[in-house]
Image (tube, helix red, strand yellow):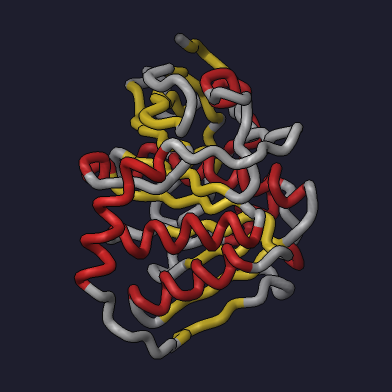
Length: 253
């Protein structure tokens, strides 16, 4: 790990249990709040991938919002797209906070994308609750350009709290979640499904299919196919993966 990347380990936070009444109330209010619109900034943040930008309503992501990436398996390379987006947000100013509870994030890969070590903070929380608390605090901080996390479980009340935190801080919340979360309620402004596509070259470019599942206040259903060049070190260090630096559009609809 680069020496200048701060790592906070075994973070413990005291929290009170969620109120069942508040959760039920939140579920009842989801439909009415979905249509609420906020004033938009003029220039959205690029995803760093031309093909993905083409299917987004404003050709990028707006600050102060959550983006949910539903990944079909570890090999689908969703993290490559996520950190390409984090890089673009970081370039506009602020830090990138990585909530790495599983301790699988590989900082040198993010450094090779152009994110400087001093521009990243890695938090390795001791529990799910502490990890969500760290994510909430990162999103509320105006000095954070993007916060990345891999929350497998998000109840509606917690999800809503994270959305409000992103609005308050003004950065991007980039949430990588399993594909099975598709059936769950979401407070993300943009929701994307990422899945790998067959390739004939074992060490050639990775091909990904990206579908826009949700866009608050905009059209949905658009699909893009992109290619990402192969790299020896992935962002979460599980197995060899791709680099988003060479992400390019293959096809879109």
